[in-house]
Length: 202
Ligand code: C5P
Image (cartoon, rainbow, N blue to C red; front, side, top):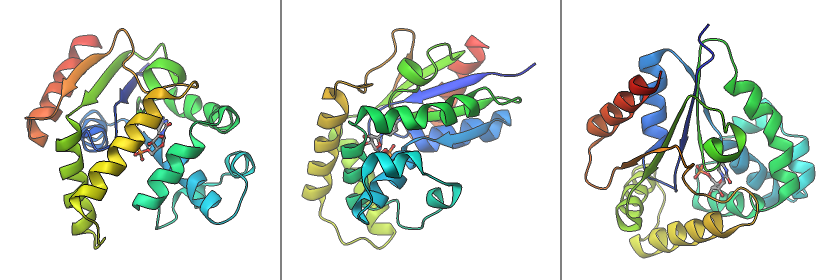
């Protein structure tokens, strides 16, 4: 029986997404980017829907909206993410996904602390704010967004601040999380560290 859950948390642009996808592929596990749930709610709020209403009526189609990776949606996501009722509306879906037969990787901010406190493996992926902002800047400009380095760094810091200091499920490492600082690691090295940590725990 392989109902193994891998919880990967950390701040914006630390490399969670890249590591999660690579690890899920390597292990044959399903992957859920939980940030997408909050982004989908944030996008609905920007379109005029009330936040809790948006969270309780979320559909698969909302997660496939094409404009969820923009800076505006990221900020809106971190604003709706402070609302307890919004978070509560998304819990069951995430927990059901985590217990899928065949294994699951979930990445977010509170997977190891709140959503899956019993996850077999917990990783906390970080990097300095400057390194993260530079990565996000390169991603955004490569996908055609007209942004400045200063604005991207300010956005990353504003989101860190909001995510770490909220009352509900704040961003922090679980006590039993393995820390991976990707500031000076390339993708292959970071993925190798994650896989080593997972193999050691399963
Ligand atoms: O990971 P991503 O940058 O897409 O997440 C967008 C926002 O959603 C985060 O800044 C955070 O406020 C929120 N989030 C959260 N809990 C999660 C995943 C994302 O609060 N598990």
